[in-house]
Amino acid sequence: MAVGPVWAAAGACLRVLQRAFSLHKAHSIKDMENTLQLVRNIIPPQTSKKHKGQDGRIGVVGGCQEYTGAPYFAAISALKVGADLSHVFCTREAAPVVKSYSPELIVHPVLDSPGAVHHVEEWLPRLHVLVVGPGLGRDDTLLENVKGILEAAKARDIPVVIDADGLWLIAQHPALLQGYRKAVLTPNHVEFNRLSEAVLRDPGDGSDREAVQRLSQALGNVTVVRKGERDVISDGEQVLECAQEGSSRRCGGQGDLLSGALGVLVHWALLAGPEKTKGSSPLLLAAMGACSLTRQCSHQAFQKHGRSTTTTDMIAEVGPAFHRLFET
Ligand SMILES: NC(=O)C1=CN([C@@H]2O[C@H](COP(=O)(O)OP(=O)(O)OC[C@H]3O[C@@H](n4cnc5c(N)ncnc54)[C@H](O)[C@@H]3O)[C@@H](O)[C@H]2O)[C@@H](O)CC1
Ligand SMILES: Nc1ncnc2c1ncn2[C@@H]1O[C@H](COP(=O)(O)OP(=O)(O)OP(=O)(O)O)[C@@H](O)[C@H]1O
Ligand SMILES: [Mg+2]
Image (cartoon, rainbow, N blue to C red):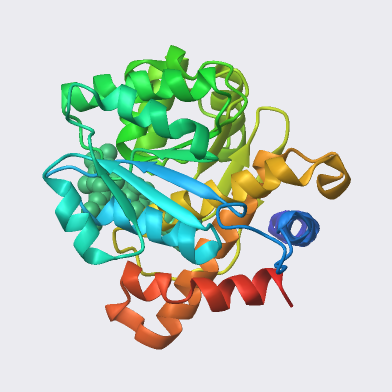
């Protein structure tokens, strides 16, 4: 019987695979650590010489009758990461609710008004980044206004982070962002599949890494962050993975935290210049920073609150998590 040699061959094969896997894992961890080092480089120093607004004026476009939490989570997270001013452009009904969550946000009740595009356009020169989509909903009038806002942001070369229902809009009209190198898309599992179907028609089999890279390429190298058990990030050229330890809690709102944090980091990364980013794509660095931070917040909050952890608990961890990842 040749069972012995077969088992021996299978065992050897398994050991080779295990070794390859652990080497790959060690490599990924090293890649992640190298990238986090570059993320530390882009963080602007805190000095007494700065004026209000310099470290970030972020606009969140979202907030409607159903969803008021999502734009709040995104906008407050931007502030907690270190932006100086955070604006929310939402519907008339949502505005008093969002305001009542926090006196720190500047809230514009304009998104469902006929002058929505014009109003946001007037603010654009004073904003560094737009985060489009958290709690936006899918009302046609709102989405039409957001189309106009995106066109206006592109015309001014303002970076945009697109999340949640903003991604729904892009799945209907991919041309809106085609080739815009200052865009970052942050789909969850379902949003990623929807976008891939819409943009690639045949998303194919391939690995997660290939799928993210292909979507980015098909959209003309916009940066794509696919959230999940591991976050996969690509600008169509490079692919990074974020495997920072998070938690097994999957409450709503964690992606909103990520999008707000990313808004600030995108501003910082673009401001930092090549001597700080050392040839790496600023948007990839910003994405890796925001993904690591969100997961670290989740990890810390879960250690304290376990099963009852919610996004509010994670937001309370933004300061300590940021310090732990980027300032020690
Ligand atoms: N407190 C709030 O106001 C919140 C509002 N939210 C808003 O809710 C709106 C809809 O967002 P959704 O994320 O529900 O988008 P979708 O409506 O596209 O999601 C569809 C469904 O997919 C499911 N899903 C998510 N991840 C999955 C996975 N990995 N595998 C299988 N199914 C999965 C979700 O449970 C959801 O019911 C957006 O505007 C969003 O910003 C969310 O951000 C959560 C918090
Ligand atoms: N299975 C998982 N294991 C660990 N972390 C995960 C897992 N899935 C998602 N995450 C993390 O949770 C965060 C939010 O991702 P998620 O997929 O929940 O976004 P979302 O559905 O857009 O959230 P939201 O409820 O805010 O809309 C990201 O930091 C991501 O890395
Ligand atoms: Mg989401």
